[in-house]
Amino acid sequence: MEDRTAMAETEPVAQSTLRDDMIARIASGREERVFLLLSIFIGVISGLLVVSFRMAIEWLSVLLLGSSPNPHQLRLLYIPAAAGLVIAVFTRYIFPNVRGSGINQTKAALYISNGYISFRTVIGKFLLAALAIGSGHSLGPEDPSLQIGAGVASLISRRFGMSKEKLRIFAPIGAAAGLAAAFNAPISAILFVIEEVIGQWSAAVLGSIVLSAVASVVVARSFWGAQPMFRIPVIDLRDSRELLAYAVLGVVGGFASLLFARCLSYLRPKLRSQPQWSQLLQPAVAGLLVGAIGYFGLVQVMGAGYEAIDQAMHAQFAWKMLLLLALFKIIATTLSFSSGTPGGMFAPTLFIGAMLGASVGTFEKIYFPHLTGTIGSYALVGMGVLFAAFLRAPLTSVFMVLEVSGNYSIVLPVILANTIAYLISRVLQPVPILEQFTHQDGLDLPSMEELREESNLHLEDAMQPVTVPVLQGSETIPDTLNSLVQYEDLKSIPIFLVHCSDGLWYTARREELEALSANQPEGQDATTPTPSAETLDEHLGPERTPILFPDQPLSSTLPHFQRWPLLPITNRAMRGSLEGTVTLEDVLNRYQKH
Image (cartoon, rainbow, N blue to C red; front, side):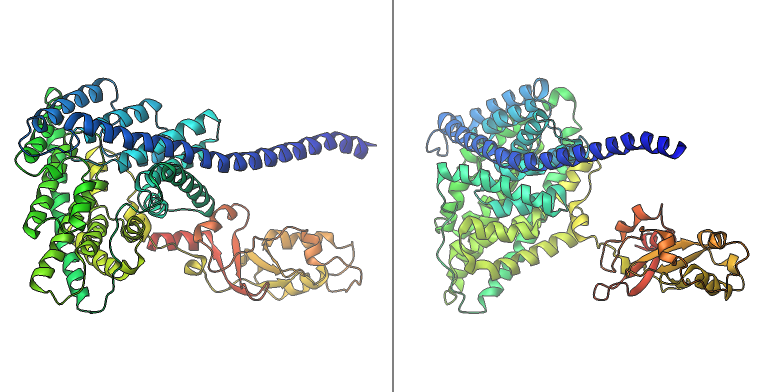
């Protein structure tokens, strides 16, 4: 009667638990479906915003500087200065979080604020970055587009009430969408977000990033068309000596990136340490100086500079002029960015790289006319070279060049030159420029370069030979007790492994096995066989230790040690075949050596 009452009381509890589990699974599945749909929606909205952002820049550029600005026009001096003053006032009093390019701000939102980016920041970034670039400040639209996309994703995910874990993931999804639309290059955007924003990825996150990036590019191409940003002839690398010229370009690009990074890392903290009142004047002074560079002859360095890149690719500058443009672009970008004017460094980086590449190509044409490379190909490789060395995104740099040109015949020179430039930058500038900015801002964000190169530990790295006794689960309990008799000092053996009949394993503590004798009928000796006796694995029940393999991440063992003092590691090819074992002490010792 008491048993029936207990069962009646237990049934509602079990049914309630089952119902709660079903509701949780349904809710989880619903959130996953909503997550994928929102990724596409974020891509579409980000694409529309980025298209509007680029149109605003072009409209402001024509309105403020004219359709074809030329040297010695006074507006080249006062327009960037006046725009800088307006930007400083709005940044100080209305949009305090729009300073910088947007990459580090997005990373900070991801790692510090659970992916939160305010809509005010999105509006401010859109308006002030468009004004800055349109008025001639030497900055680019791609990095702000990344932050705009991340901000849109943050807003939409909050409106839909996503969990905190999903909110944190949505920032890089929107970032990829914004960058993909700005670059018209989804693969490069995806790789850059993985390399520089999140550092690591999972299949689920990658799928959502791809969906949002593709959706945004489809929207952008409906306005701009599907053609690549730059067109160059197909490269026919007939002479292997041509690779030497690309290697030289890699060396030149590596040292140019070092100069660029050193200028920024020196001037930016100097200006930020000045009194608050002087910071209101810094964007205006920077605009005046950049305008002066354009006024006295180098108008090409103002704004993003994509038109000048196209001109360099089509051999419209002498090689000395190309070097001048590269040098003064470094100066102009350093001034604009260090003053706190919102805008990105992607376009200036591509500009500098294109000028250096075209100068090497032009020099080759003059002094080594027998080589067959085109100036456009050198300019294009130069863009990738500086991108790899300055922004320290080597994988993105290769695919970026391939996507913006649509020319896959250039892949070998790109890989060679980019690798040389990247290695020079790594050796001479150990801390990447984006990481330096985070330190200057008083933040401690993870180093994406270190995350990419961090070697992950696996179970085989901590695995030890099997040293504990192994019992067979198919034995009856009397047979098991007989097996235990052979161990003279049983109390010195805290753990046994049981190989169960189903091929799996069970880690048994000594106390569990000592309790087996209590199951024997009174007066029956442990050595007396009993045909109908219960087997050891039947007594232990259906629970088994988790199935683990040597190639799995070492961290995957940590949740299991609360239940199991020792974990068996098995072979993938032979079910139940032991490769070794690990304990919590083995795992911790291996991490300490890492």
